[in-house]
Amino acid sequence: MHRLADIYFTEIQPVYTFLDPKMVHRAISGSPDQPPQHPSNCVLLGIAALACLFSTEEASDLQSEIIHNARASLEYSTTLAAPTVDHVVGWLLRVLYLRFTSSPNATWLASCTLIHMIETVKLHYEPSQNNKSNATTASQDPDPYSPQLKRQMYYTAQIFNTWISYDYGQARIAPRGASCTFPSEGWTEESRTFWKLSDTLDPNLPLNAAELETMLEQAVQLNPSHPAMKLKRCNIALCIYRRLRVTGCTVSPSAVDKILQLGDDGIQIATIMAKARSPWWHVLNVPFQFLCVLLAIDTRASLGRVGQAFQTLKLLADEYGAEAIQETWASACTLLRLQIRRKRDDFELLNCVENDILAWNSGGAHSTSLDLSLPEQQHLLPDGGDYGPGEFWELDEIFSSAVH
Image (tube, rainbow, N blue to C red; front, side, top):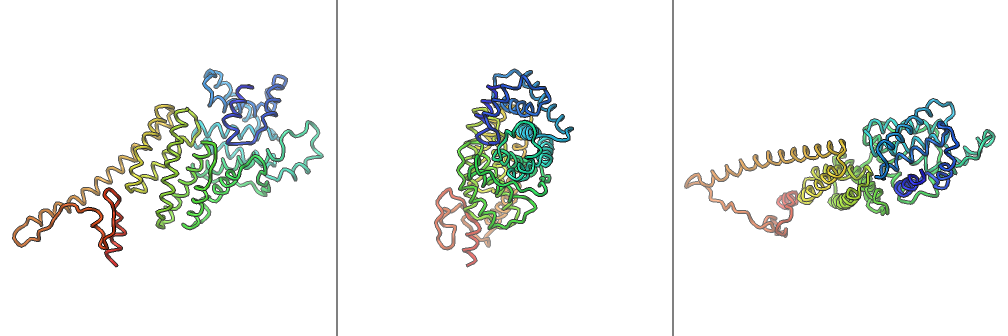
């Protein structure tokens, strides 16, 4: 357990900080003297289950036993009239584990249970005030969780419920009367910005194109150090771009350039993490979402990146082999085939027109003779604008120049 805890604090703690390593190791040392239903076992089993995802040393039967016991201890906690903060932490660890391994529905349901457990324990209230109100009822051991850790638990739980609800298209839960303030320790400025951007992306909040492009710029300016957080930044940016398209407004070229650059970074990071067999969920999510965005943008600059996105998805399918990843690979292939079919249909429509032109050009003495060879692109613009060979023909600009 000490070794598994070390793996947890090496892999998970740098991204989601809501546990004290010293407190956990003390609990491990005292665990043989505790009954199985003791609240601390929810925490220890949750830590062990997550650590197993990043370790290749545990036998599969041991992992199965850990996961079974972790689930059983949490199910027991839902029958208690007065659950503890340990039970909340256990549910938060369970949500993290399911986010790595399970279906959206199971993860969303667990995240909802987590928020309701937080309401039961009153963790959504400001801890400094809540501790004063509970001071007279605390008769056993002092609370091992500091106010800062409680704030970190609450906001970590909220961001998980928020993003899982976005991904699954379900409602998120907002505890009534929540007064818990942002953590002043343990949360970086990037973490605060991540939370604020995530909260603002609520589908029920109306956002215009200017507001969304401002949010995109905020995401671009983030510079997290951990690879998983960099992928999270990419995911938020891709979500902002999808909202921009939904507005029906024209997306500025600078916004598209930012999305492509962030996507390039995400693909590179996902490839490195896949080769290291790091199971963070954004390793799969970001390449697939970026592929969808590339096909939607549908320019030479975006389509030129499709091959790299497919290479990364194929690497993930080969490295992990999980059923969900295979389904994602199959979905990506289907999307590409649909895009190719649409392009072929468009080609056939234009090709028919070209065939008609050829027929008209050779139709007799009174037909107009046309030079049908392709001109250099810089000669296309009526005002003599220069587009170098191989660059994308901005047909909107050509049309605008012709009109004026």
